Length: 293
Image (cartoon, rainbow, N blue to C red; front, side):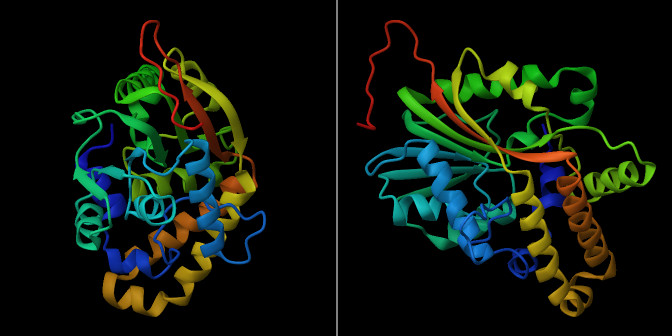
């Protein structure tokens, strides 16, 4: 799994830095652009889609694994009327930001999912862009990553009630670039922005999810992520002078390179955005309580 130091490199550059080029809710993941006129609308559509995939209804208890700066926690409590939304993050900057927001019926924990122990079972789970941090590149190369994902799905299953659903979003690798320039740029972007992260193939997740969760639906949103990355790049460039002055030339150049590489990787079909609707596979003898009806 990505270490706390890896996560610090990725997410703790500074909340003010990310606020300059992310949407107003500070979603650091792909938005859905089908009917969206702005990135803010696209990100709201993403939150809505994943809450629907998780079967979220008023009064539920929902877990957000890898909660970022709290965009989903806010959406769940303010707009979906859940009884409780609990977020996990390894980023101290994100944890402090969410804690200061004091969102109604929301809580956040600075904790690895490997150490997490819930006080009560959840009715639904959502996780956005976290699974990429579960296995390291070394585990991916050795083939250990599928076992890591299987343990992740086992744990999330154990934290939920029978009948629970899971809205999952992550970046998938589709194919490895063949051009030396593409490989070099992808390697640089990973090392400088997402050290310790690894994007699995679709079949890796499909192999790991059973026998804990059933895949009800899957959507690939490759061009949506190209569009989101392009909008982030445009907003970053608008703040170039401020970023260079406050965070340094290297920070601006690393992020500009990273976002340009993202646009190229998604447009070129090397990576995609996967969205899953999962349903808990209940064990024989478990009391079943389907709260979606």
